[in-house]
Every structure is written in C-alpha cells, then in structure tokens.
Length: 166
Image (cartoon, rainbow, N blue to C red; front, side):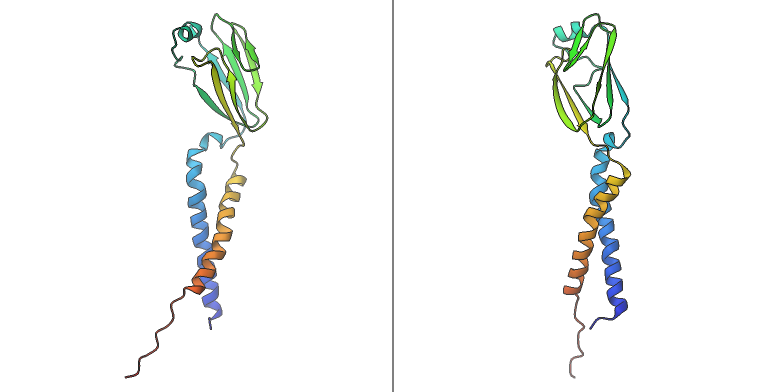
C-alpha cells in the first residue's frame, strides 16, 4: 500500500513539524517569564530616606516596587536608609540597618509592610526556568503532537486519481 520510504518521510516530516510547533508553543511564553530564567541570587531592596514621610502622605516611594518576583533560593536583603524603623512580614528593619529573608519554597506572599501606602508587599517566589525545563516543555508538546500528525497524515492522504476511461 505505502512504500517504506514514503512512511519514513511522513514520520520524519511529522516529527520536524511537531518540534517546530513545540518550540513555538513553549518558547513564546518564555519571553514573558525571563525574570525567572536565572540562578538564585541576593536581591537588595533599599528603603530610601524620607520613605516614612511619603507613606504618611499616601505617596508611593518611586524606588520601591509594589510587588517583586523571585526564584526559589533567592535571598532578599532589605536595607533601611530611612530614619524610621520598618517592617516587612517577619522582618523588623531598624533605621540605618538591614535584614534578610531567604526564599526557599515556591509560594506567593502578601506581607504586611510599613514602607508601602497600602501596607502590604507582594512577593512571588517561582521555580527557576532552566534549560532542562525548557527542553522538557518542548518535548512534552512535540512528542504527542508528532504521533498525532503522523497518524492524521496517513488517514487524510489524498488518493491517486485513476485514469478515466476514454
């Protein structure tokens, strides 16, 4: 019915097409998640002088983000350069000192915070995206898709037209 080379070509075409689709489907979201495609590190958050006065007026200090994203294994160091003591969740940071928080598990936190107008600070801790997880994502999509494409390519193969009688 089908020659061996025809079957091999169909299967190879299906695998290549599925890998391309897998790369497209898996890597496009990666462009939006690049902040977690790194090794764990120490991240310093500085509370500038005058922050307490800005908070009292209901203003957002421009150098302090409202939320931050981390990877598992990061260490957040909060430096308080303000003249007032501040709090971030379990951390008490006296004036002109620092405190640190190890982020060892994947979780989203909403900590009580004295250096934000809303009195809370969001921390998202995510698993780091490694080359291995990216390859796994591509193969997780591509392998089943290759099988389906190959099967459908044989089911929907156009039949040869036979010569009509004259």
